[in-house]
Image 1 (cartoon, rainbow, N blue to C red):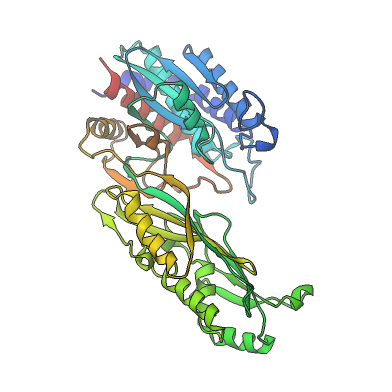
Image 2: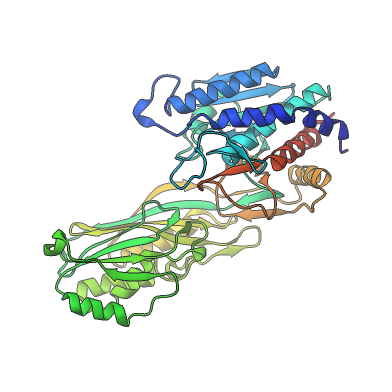
Length: 467
């Protein structure tokens, strides 16, 4: 049953919620491992933000607990647990902002700041949804626990620690993605393939990419044994697609090492490699047309055939897909060839009905063709809650009743804290058609969307935990 009374309570809390988000954004809660201390395992900025948020929870009348600075929780009610998982850590602000990144500035009816959308705004919307239920004296049959994470943007160490100290709710949602609802999240592997070898005659260096989960927009190649004129001619004759360039760097002190070529592409998120143009792959395709040694030619041909073929794992014979989550994706995120050897890292997002070994074995077999050793750097298992489960249907009903929009469940290649809960889904806050500004300069949360998310979350809690 949709509760209008709840909406009135939330409208009454509007100014308080907006101010809370502004204040919370002012903490620079970026992981800072140079200044850790007891109670601040990820640095002072994250600690201060966690302590502030817990104290806000206490002021609003809730039970709060600080789990040694690794996480916090804010609770109401009693009974079995319903979990809501948000996080207070943020990625670094980066460049290109039109307002100070930790100001919580309001303009155009939006709250601007790093973390406004990912994930402080939505986390506080969930907290104020709890407050509205409390003020409306609505009886609940579950204990509602808002869990405050602090390491979501890095290694999820907060949740590893939390699990050793507290019970994990079986059921719940993460307000850290988009509406209507994400019921399936692909498994994620970051795999390193490497081998050592003696210096090669022509290929001195191929370097591109900084993170496995980003499509590289730049790649540097250093070559020797070619004249500048020869390479300039080859580049001018080569056809790159729109948005991709290859240029010889002007003469510099590094000439004795070799001639430097810079390839530029188009960046994208590693889960959507087809949305970008990977500079490393275009560099490798160009190199295939040069007169290299046999060993170099075999290496470049293998790279073009394996990580360089397709966006969906075709090159490694793992082009899998399934109905709940769609196609596997593969991104060559980091490439480092130097005189000591080769190392590269691929990001693979695999469909939810597949097992890790079905991915690892074919990749390892392909690597062995040229003597590469494979190492698993990270693995997040796939996660999937059926569309017809009571959790999904209750949440979608809350979404549709409050917004008037059609509710449906879909799958993503990214990973959210929904994976921490045995039955967890990602639920909001972005509405269909709203721009995706997380991790971008001028990140913001629209105030109307913040209030609407708060109303959806209060109704969702009521649907899942009401008497």
